[in-house]
Image 1: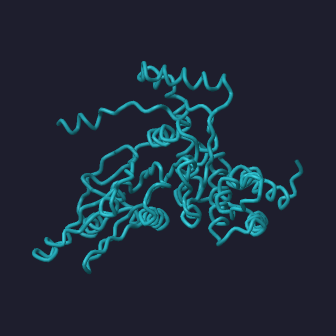
Image 2: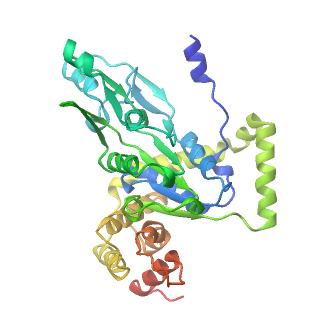
Image 3: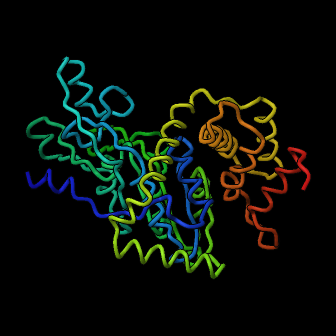
Amino acid sequence: MVKENLKKFNTPVFPFTAIVGQEEMKLALQLNVIDPKIGGVMIMGDRGTGKSTTIRAIADLLPEIEVVKNDPFNSHKSDLDLMGNEVKLAIQNNETLETELIKIPMVDLPLGATEDRVCGTIDIEKALTEGIKAFEPGLLAKANRGILYVDEVNLLDDHLVDILLDSAASGWNTVEREGISIRHPARFVLVGSGNPEEGELRPQLLDRFGMHAEIRTVKDPILRVKVVEERTSFDQNPATWLANYESQQQELRDRIVSAQKLLPTVEIDYDFRVKISEVCSQLDVDGLRGDIVTNRAAKAYAAYNNRDKVTIQDISKIITLCLRHRLRKDPLESIDSGDKVGKVFKEVFEIED
């Protein structure tokens, strides 16, 4: 009973629709929620610019999901790619599965986390003495069908970042210990944030994030005052504040859900696909990840705007987010990588300023 009551009690979260500015970060998060296969988002920006607040706000905004009750992997009751082995066995044996609605899982990865804490561990003693694959799920299991947030990802051990990116890309986590192997679904939106003053992420790891948003401290005094006033009002009376934004929150929630449903039908012309690859080629982007992510993000943005065909405006809106972190750094070059992407995009798509 106490557990049920605790579930109903939620700490108020600042509403996503009330966040002032930071449009680039908000767009990247929304597109990743519409299509998690984009591959997550890396948010780099100054301290105190609302990175953590925005990420918690998007998790709170999303509708509840249906999961199999008491399942550590938040298994889906019918999608095989989103369910653990125990649920699959229960379905094969025609067992009735109880389900419940839960909020989208939002998992914070602490900086000091070990590999066992992230991936989970196998109880070797139990496996040897009783012949049971006793698996203790980690944070990746908890994050399945949700959002995994790593603050200060540039300070995290490279090996752990690699594991997170592998799982985010494949949608599965494999744990192997002493010849015993366990595999479970781990499909989540990976969100990393960091402060550039504390060091950059290695290029080969940065490249594996689908999108890269750069955020700056708001300079306009009027906007700054608005941010301070809104935060103060929310802290003083969260319930009233949330009620004021409920209709806007519901509107955006419905828009994201309808975009998720429309996404499989969205098409992108062959000519546009060729031109996207031409932009990547001219920018000397290594590999094909940039091409794939840009195509996916353009489709997600078209779906977000309730269209089933990608336009040049869709590509223009997302291409900088998808490519700026894939360019080779030239210390002698004065032009910002984002501006460089925009310049080449206009040349290839023959757009005049």
